[in-house]
Image 1 (spheres, rainbow, N blue to C red):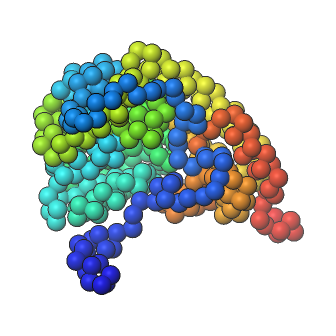
Image 2 (cartoon, helix red, strand yellow):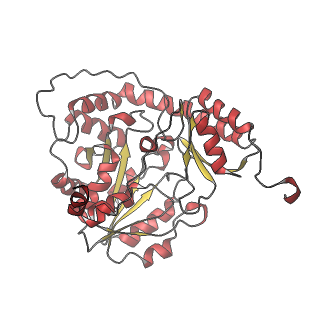
Length: 363
């Protein structure tokens, strides 16, 4: 019976490797440094209890407050079930399965490929160049038939910003041909780098945002798509009737109040201080080959024996994110910024590990 059920599924779904989220990967840790979450809970409580009625499709207070926060008009904002839904809505609205393609630049966020495969859209990749910047000539060569170009900046998992001059060149290159989707999930950690003010100059620019990271609301599943009104109107045609539950809209509205935004900025400042402390300590660990600069709430580091490091810390309840399968990231682990105590535990465990798996006489 199970085989016959599986045969009913679409061929691309049967062949699909699902996105391996931090929670799917599991672990029995008490120091979770693998999902880029804020390490402490925020003090919001439900104030809306009329759950017998359907919620608004686009809750007015949430839209107005996010538009104010982003410096945009309300018709330039769409709220959804995390930024992941925004990734998929764009494909559903703009790409014909079997005809159009999307493009992105690994190493980067894994849901671009999973969403494309799920819908049945071709995806093309152009590997990032030096310092994980855009390889613009290679992108230009692969744009025929591409409707969406996803660029994660700051990039996950590398933590770097994409050069704004390259983004402008990409936007000029795609004008009238494709949408450029700037995934700004981590932009609160470097707000000066946001492209939101560029929307007035580029009708084909789209920006993805989330409350999961700096706002410390990963469990809420609330994200935003910022774009010109014409794009938002098209996305409204394909979004679910009630994408945000009443409790989600309630908490999101509180998080986007003046007090909520001030709290977020305070948390960002504290986390950045911990990040810089952790970077300096990692560079003193013998088992660490390289620590990359970061503009986010995580750090990418290369280890002499990353498998051993990952396993050793896992067994001590310190859960990191293995990046070895990402292009160009052999030996790399990603470390989310936890509390100072959590980061201290990770450093203490790393200090006990040897600096190289190569015997001394061969070094």
